[in-house]
Amino acid sequence: MAVLVFRHGPLEPIGMIADVLGPREIEWRYVDMAESQDDDLPAQVDEAQGLIVMGGAMSVNDSLPWLRQEERCLVRAISSGIPIFGVCLGAQLLAKCLGARVSPMGCKEIGWYPVRFTEDARQDPLFEGLAPEETVFQWHGDTFELPAGSVRLAESDLCANQAFRSGSNLYGVQFHPEVTPGIIDSWCVADSHCGEQREASGPIDAEAHQDRMRQMANVIFGKWCEMIVSR
Image (tube, rainbow, N blue to C red; front, side, top):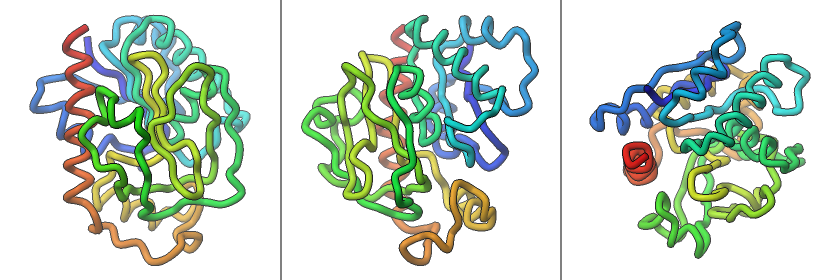
């Protein structure tokens, strides 16, 4: 058994998440969704310890057959009760599979932005211990509505729904807790990546806030690992 990582392109590695999973001896492997022709993927989902769904340059509303396959696998995983963590596009896919609408924001968040954690986040198993406001990395133009019955965990000035929890095991975050300077640099070079660097509110310093981002990743995903191990 291992954690499956649904990846939507080579520019979407799990970054600092791997630094948290590795020392805890939690095995993980990528499933490259756009290239996957794996007929036994549903069976792999059934056997997975957990599921991480990464970001991507596409929209959940694009007419891509493999996205529909991914949604079916996500619904299957949700029904199984395994821990699921969605990042950016992954959070939008998770929200959609839970019945929520995903749509363009009308603006884009690209670069470093503050997010505010809610009172529910301050008592959440994963987000407890974070500051009321943190600066995180963003790169998106779509947003999700909160799925019915879910809990809002974070918000920003431009995007009301920055993080949510559904039940006790389903988490989605609009921002990117996984990014390293190398990942950010690769996105800045790839202009088609969910928007263009020139659409950012200012120059992007890939090194900014990295120490705190690593601390945040250790908190959030360290506790997510505990959820995996306790099953």
